[in-house]
Length: 218
Image 1 (cartoon, rainbow, N blue to C red):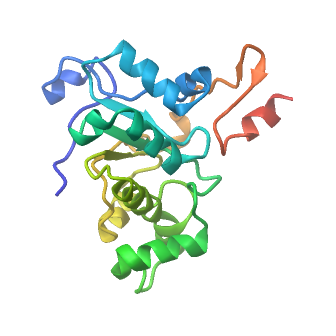
Image 2: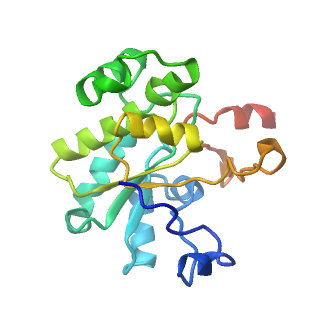
């Protein structure tokens, strides 16, 4: 079951959780710089060899494929439960291999109780919509297990407020850690911001699903 908040992203407040340092994952910018999710994972591990490895897998829109590729590169970390994959797919697209029909199919097989009763439009968005959904998380777990990596962990982020967390619980989504916080201010739009690198050595590049950043630059 859930254990509550276990850490935060900033050094200034880490002590509230009994830690010396903030917690986090590699940035999307590292993956763009590296040119592949696998190479970014290798670079991170080379720099921090004693730390558990949490890899973002949404940059190129190949969430499950890249996760399996990284597991095969670091099988010892995966077997020890020290390799995790952060799902942060933007709301502009589905996770790899999913669409609306396929998302319903995944939940029908894994958590049928979550979709057989009445659901509001907002609830269905968290279950079978675009972005990081219960169906996407279940799909990631299935792919990792089928590839022989049942101890690889899943970190979920992107819009996880209380209501989205409630729907994840309703679907019994196999999440190990949730990254959250942007929902905390009452007026979300007054505090929320992202810092996206949109070109590397003059070549335009953004993560899959955020191509609008390139259009807005023109």
